[in-house]
View 1 (cartoon, one colour):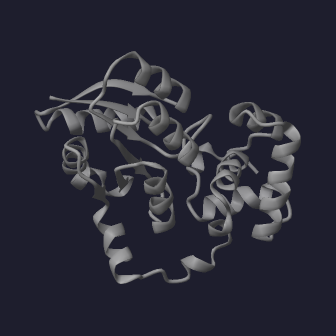
View 2 (tube, one colour):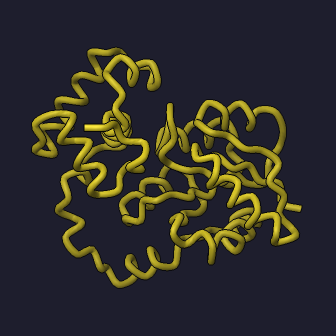
Length: 217
């Protein structure tokens, strides 16, 4: 049996993924986490064959979390399962140490195959994303301003888009409030946005955060 841990902040989605995986017969979901801190705590308790990880959870998330997990558990395969279908996100995740990248809209058809392949030491890329990369169908994506952000700026961006203030983000990322304020100013300049409300609207429009996680404007 492949011992899997699911890390995603949506309880109903985790339940659906659990049913899908355990129906396969050779996969057992033996732990669930709703945020990065819970994932790290569970990973430290016992060996796992695979971590299925959402890149956009409360607290530490995304590329930073992947890097930390790889540093602390270098032999653990990580399969990213995310709503972000842009190839730039996949490239960042894989460079950080993920062995697979699958979009949530492909999960029903591809998740079991992806879990088996990544747990077995292979690599997996969502078929639709692999096709886009192969044929270089970028469209206008390369001109989107959020693609100019560094990994850390993108992490701060997502927290801002979720409605967190500078102090909250500083605590989550173990940085000073002044540093977060600097990042925020830099992000707004790079993206040609006026304020955090504009940033939230941009994030929703481009599906960079789940709309249900975004604050009311």
